[in-house]
Length: 274
Image (cartoon, rainbow, N blue to C red; front, side, top):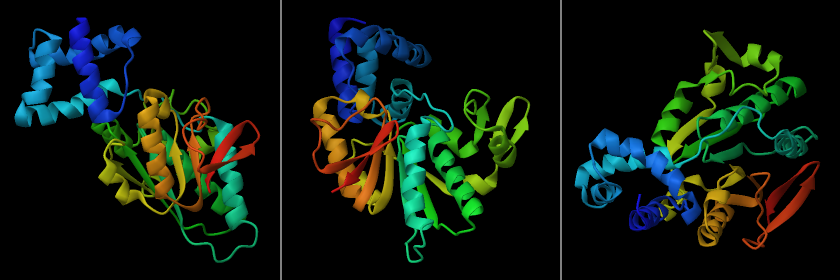
């Protein structure tokens, strides 16, 4: 990949996804796109760029493949327990402290990858309802830019690696183990609605308003400052007053937004809409 090819492809990817590849990531981008060139029978990255830019209907189909290869989809069930503990505490305050008139909880898992995060949240709520003998009406929507991972999320079939942090009791209760894979039961899957959504699409956010909780973990690290501010501003507008935003444990809203109130929990921070 020449410097010129890297530049035009990097800028094209940024325009479409908001993901920014620094020049130090040239080899990474090259390795991720090489299979696409081979699949399409193209001889250069320049040809691939022109195929994306001017290939009409074929290019529209290839965009989905591009989104699949440039996104990172590392995830697992019950990932980063301190953040999940904070979520549980906030739910308990709403539903297990004698509050009888709390409306249904609306949760959005943005950039949900293969579904481990939203399904984890569904399992947690189901466990809380059973333990507290209380009904918690809830809706979870899960979105991602990659159609490949969304298809995987809908199937609900996971590897041993995906459930490595999951308690054995939970695995037996909510999964069926078959041939070294774990199939999520429909009792969990039915609680999560999975949709395509590009965080670069300003109009798409209109479908995800009035959320009580938004999880957008380990996404901002792939954006530059301009894109980070744009996404966070949209997420702010999608939350109900006093709603909560959770970002990656290594991410911060410092220098991005002062509209949120940071809430300190053991080992983590949640952000509340001010």
